[in-house]
Amino acid sequence: MSRVHRIEVPIPFPVKWVNCYYIEDSLPTLVDTPLNTPGSLEFIASFLKDRGARLEDIRRIILTHGHLDHSGLAGRIAEIAGADVFVHPWDRSIITVAHAEQIERSTECFRTFLQEAGLPETQVSELVDLIMSRSARMISVMPDDMPLKHGDVIPFDDFDLDAIHTPGHTPGSMCLFNRKDGTLFTGDAVYQEVTCNPLFDAANPAGSGPYRALSEHRESLELLRGLPVKSVLPGHGVPHSKHRQRIQRILADHDRRRNDVARILRETGNGDDATEFGVAARLFPGMSGIEVFYRVCAVRAHLEILEEEGHLEVSQNGSARSYRLRDHAFPYR
Ligand SMILES: [Zn+2]
Ligand SMILES: [Zn+2]
Image 1 (spheres, rainbow, N blue to C red):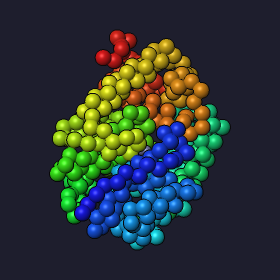
Image 2: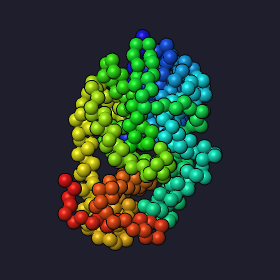
Image 3: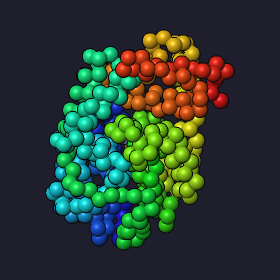
Image 4: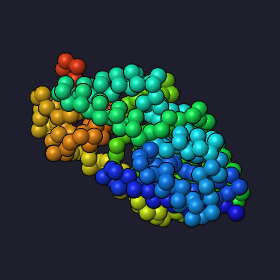
């Protein structure tokens, strides 16, 4: 009989916990794995042991997305168990970011992104080093993975999970929907804070035009809003049954945040502060360490929408981009 168990694993991030799911089945399956940090493998092994299973029994590992807090241990568990790892192809570059053959390209990608965002050069180098060392430490080397695509149906003994592509949080974010009982595994797709990550492939991973993380995210949320969901199994936090209210609140938060970004641009005029980093520093005073990266990503995502809607003039200022608000008849809505 198939049974879903939530494994709440501690992680050394501000969010404190990540949810992985063990699906008891004739093909024992994990949905997401925690970071590859000391103790986390033992944590999963002991959880499984209490339910009469072993790491070696795992046959499939399905990743909702490539972020290290959801994929870090996948390589190690796959190696121990000989399990298949399923991930959307657009998140491949995230899970392999620190693989030897990718390091140079990944480093360059981050450096360019942060320079364009207007970070001072010393901070660019520090932050690139931090991002790359975290990835190298916390993501285990992945075996060849199996592509997980929109429309795939993953069979279990008592139900099927439909794979739904919900790009935005990352390009390859996937939700898994059990139509039989209305359960939806969301990973980080229905997550309050926007830390979109359109960085590893600066071009659209699909190969045509730029990848617009927040527009994609909003479309994905609209798609999820239409599903007959009874219960959400999220990547962080407790399961809940309020998916429509959550989505509504996230969309409203986006609008509010975009208003804040526009207000700051209006206040800075076209000064040196009007970069992604400059806006982030005013919006999130005191930000430090890896948080700078996430905040800059979020600001970039909102600026992309403002630009798309014709509200911005974008100019190149050395290696950085600077922004000027065109439409002074803001606020946003
Ligand atoms: Zn994530
Ligand atoms: Zn996460």
